[in-house]
Amino acid sequence: MAVSLGIRGMVGGADTSENAGSGRIFGTVAVAPSPGTPVSRRVHLFVARTGRIVRQTWSEADGSYAFTKLTLVPEYWIVVAHDHTKTHNAVIADLATAE
Image 1 (cartoon, rainbow, N blue to C red):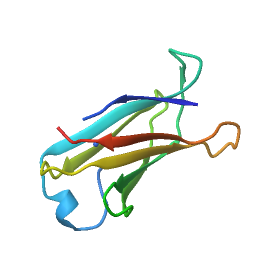
Image 2 (spheres, helix red, strand yellow):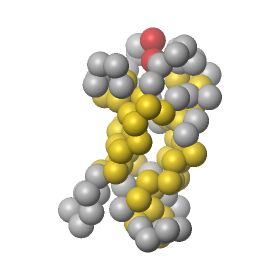
Image 3 (spheres, rainbow, N blue to C red):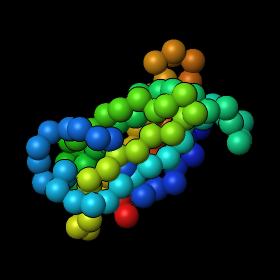
Image 4 (tube, rainbow, N blue to C red):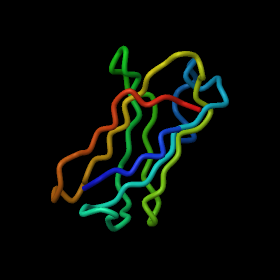
């Protein structure tokens, strides 16, 4: 499984400072080889500094997902796409930033 990330954020999540901004991270989850077949998979968003999970969502049938209302302060995020079918390993995008 490949994650094609247009790195820039899921609606919801806890009421914390991570939800206080106008930034977003978005992307597409697809099964390799490139360009890949878009798939619906669980996507998690973690704070890179602490490893704390702050949001999770399912990508749409076209593979797209978005995490919105993220803080724009110098914060790095980790995005993980998990294959619930247990066919492919998870894919990680490290040091993502919200735009």
